[in-house]
Image (cartoon, rainbow, N blue to C red; front, side, top):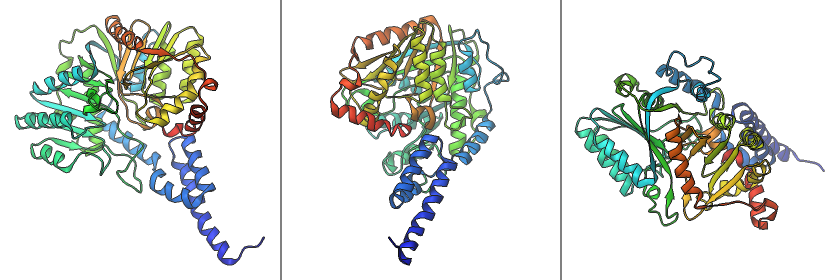
Length: 468
């Protein structure tokens, strides 16, 4: 076979950009799995792979991480002992070390189950705000609930309360311009989190800020799994009832949460606000809960999101129950869960029986057997979509936040959770999860016994696990 000059020129024009794109992917990708996937596509199908990588794949992660770390350093860490080796007798110490913070004492926690209780409590607190309100959501919809939030923030801003709103929305598919104009006209400060520089600029599918947080006057904070839309109130006919959890916190852990917001705001808006925030929550706090806020980020020097789950598995002596809408664990996380189950820990993963996103739903079936064979259990929540991100360790440690048990949360998203130690708080979470388990069925069918279509979809979807 011989090639003419034109053929050689065409091949060269395709090969040079493909090699360059493959090298960039190898050099800048966040994970080896992601890099390998792009390299295979680029080299096998350069006419498709090179443009796709240029538009959707390329992101200078190293530069982004360095700049974000420098921005966070200006806000500072939680305390002078944040880098001290953890006390091996303190079961929360490893979470504090992961978060570069300290375990706080004197906190109180109220569990908020589902949308009505959550937003009633949040809107009541915002309505009582005297000095400032910090609001951060991944999703806000221009529906009845989203407009209620908007109108309440506008009312407080007009009353002289300073309001900051962070919302990570994609351009063209987010809130209408009129929504933002009304907020800004009332004096609400608004910003959108930033990812690494890339060809499509703000069209960022990775490195999204998935945190949900409301802080009022530095005295109370709210965090958990719910975004701000009617869907999370159970009013979307596509999903029906929506099972989710938030919590209200008072005490010095509130200061950790608002420091995290200040770091996100500084990066997003270039505006240092920490000195304008109050520290009253640390005064006279006498609640029973020890707590630490943990905010995993893809720019952390270690994989904090994955290590959070590994730390839970390591801390568990008798029980580890985790609720998550997606079960697509990193291999290290899966190994830690398996080891906990093999140690005799009661490992239960509660997942929804109905999907909101089909790829992670299918992929999860390819992981279930690996946990079950080690003695872990999979429980599938029936009758509604379950979106909560809650963990219970033994009889004294619990966690409520935004972290899904998937690779995206572990490596690619900015997340938030609060890990707490208190027997009464853990008992409250246990009672809630027992109610959830009553609506679950235990998975007893192995993947080879599932319908052939599901077997194919599970194994095929798992190939895309690094992007889930």
